[in-house]
Image 1 (tube, rainbow, N blue to C red):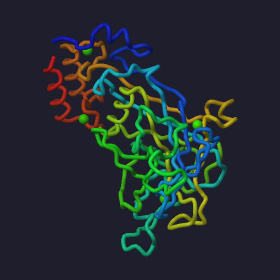
Image 2: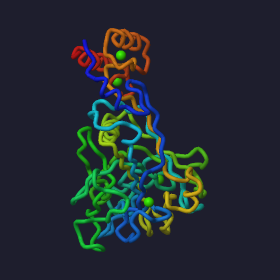
Image 3: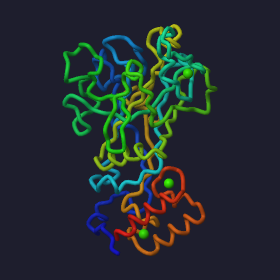
Image 4: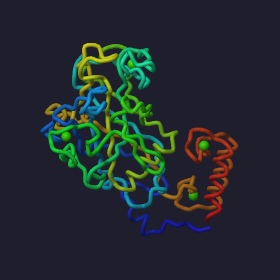
Length: 343
Ligand SMILES: [Ca+2]
Ligand SMILES: [Ca+2]
Ligand SMILES: [Ca+2]
Ligand SMILES: [Ca+2]
């Protein structure tokens, strides 16, 4: 057996000890109200999130709040996607508008946004619409390497112009291999995407209006391997992009009431957020760097990892959830031994 991580690689780790779980906490490096008629790219002092449900020329998720973190200065990048084992991601955003929108901490079916005349329409069973956290995808000439908060809405169409399906960066679900599916038009396309997380707060009762200053927490579901892979890819690249969005309509529509009752969040440029960093969108992330089979985190893959894994498996300890799907079963056992046998 041997370790594949050289001393050179270890020396490259600054602030993170190879093998051990590192804690990363940081405000967003950039934030952007991604909306076709926003002409102050990146400099907005708040970011609204609303829908233009089934309105031709606009995306259903018309107004999105894009966020970026430059992680490479804190978490060494370029080690290879399989070296980043993310165990916790929580994003926090603070509400900037007061008692305007209703809190809904659970998913609403896409069919609840259909016209009531649609045979597949279902009523929204709970007041309000969830605020959701998604990954992002890119089109036109944009990429994770080049896009930042000051970039234009779209390099692919006249600006302003028809804005449907043309934003360079869009809220998306991504499969484990990183293939993005744009969810910006999930109502007209009849998609039922599952977000990385739904915004929640213990301070507001579901269905109640949300006070300004309320912190909305997005606790990412990392039991889904595609979600873990999203963050592993981002850390390997050294840059993370996320999107906070809501389908709460900007104007009246099915389930939308009178309209205009949508969430708005502080950006880092807001004068209040400049003086009080806790108002900025921020992330807390836990990641272990190194070989997956190094379960005891001592940078070596050896008999001690074998013994630790067997012990954890017998005890039903979370350490034995090798594939990270939040269940401990024979698949974890097989996966660990497949990796371990490679050393
Ligand atoms: Ca900004
Ligand atoms: Ca609802
Ligand atoms: Ca070890
Ligand atoms: Ca498992």
